[in-house]
Length: 98
Image 1 (tube, rainbow, N blue to C red):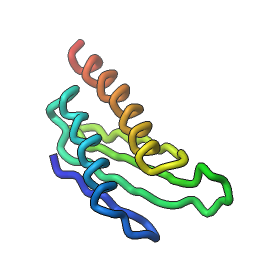
Image 2: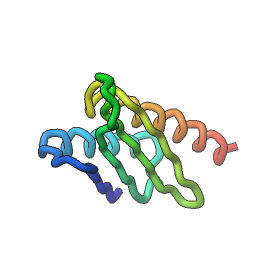
Image 3: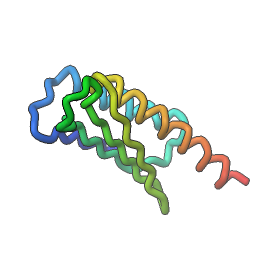
C-alpha cells in the first residue's frame, strides 16, 4: 500500500510521520485489497486546545473511505481517524462478502 502524508502549514517530524504510516498500514490487517492511503495533518486556526486535525483517505477497488478527526495531538487525531476507518473497512468487507 502506498501512503502519502501531507503536513499543511507546518513541518512534521519523522517520528510523527512514522507513527501515522504505521497506523494506516495496520488497516491492511483487516482488508488486504487497499491500494493507497493519503493523510493530511493540519492545524486548525482556532484558539482551542483541540486544534490538531487528521484527515485520512484510503482507496480500495471501487471505493474510497474517509475519516476526519480533531484532537489535542496529531497522534490522537490520527489514531481516532484510523479507528473510524477500521470500522468502515470491516463494514465494507462484510458487505462484499455477502
